[in-house]
Each structure stands twice: as C-alpha cells, then as structure tokens.
Length: 98
Image 1: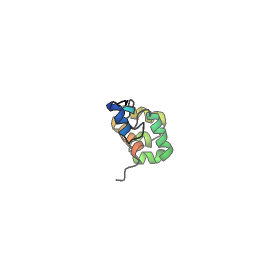
Image 2 (image 1 turned 90 degrees about the horizontal axis):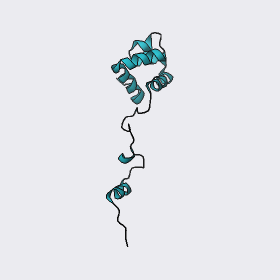
Image 3 (image 1 turned 30 degrees about the vertical axis):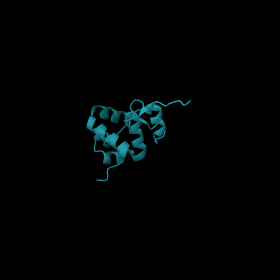
Image 4 (image 1 turned 45 degrees about the vertical axis):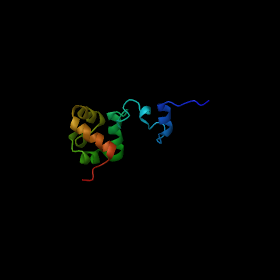
C-alpha cells in the first residue's frame, strides 16, 4: 500500500533551495535587509569602517563633519529621511563609485 504525498510535501522535496531560503521559511521582515539592525548599529559600524572624516566626505551632512558624535548623528538621522536613506545605502552597498 503506498501513501500519497500532498502538493506541499512534493514542493518541499523538489525545491532545490536550502531550508531557510524558501518562501515558507521566511519570517517577518525577511525581505528587508535591515530587519533587526538598529540605526545606532549602522552608524557605529560605518564609524568603525570609515571614521568621521571619511563619513563626512561620503555623505555630505554636518552631523558627520562638525563636532560629530553618535548621539547627535542619531538625532539628526531620525529626523531627516533623505540622510538616513543615504546612511543605510552606504551600510548595505558600500561607497558609490561615481
């Protein structure tokens, strides 16, 4: 006597992607590469990679150029969506080659 497999079981067997990379394995925010990463983590990581001087050259905002600090940068970036988008893009993709 043979037992049949339902469609979802067959799909799992035929899916070549590793477990964890399948749609059904995706949790909340799985399509957001910044899910679970705070703005403070982003700023501190960029600071370690580039330092304040280089950050001020890569992203032309005063919070990175004049008397920079993590708290003042976070305050500015939380209130300024265009600057935050530039910081997040630098974190994700690195410096632009333009």
